[in-house]
Image (tube, rainbow, N blue to C red):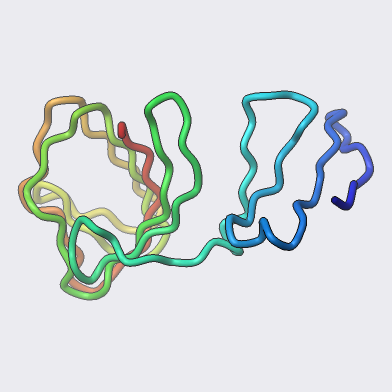
Length: 133
């Protein structure tokens, strides 16, 4: 592993060996409990949740996960209930959640127990989400 100099915050970052590039994780081994991930190096994968949607898995901890989500034009999530809070932040495009139009810069929070009945994107979008597994 290649070691980089100590950062201004005092952490030493390590570059993972080439076999670890598939996960594209740069991990701090000095302080446990941290997971650093360069999303630019994470491949998009088809969502198991719905057609026309791709995701980048960015991390999981303590029962919560973070993903980048990309909708193709016309894609939609099926009806689903939130088993815990769900946070989204729109980066590109427009999404419609429960009748509310969300464009780049908008954030939405769905409380535990709420139901998304019609989350969709007419022209495509990209957003960051944190949700309960």
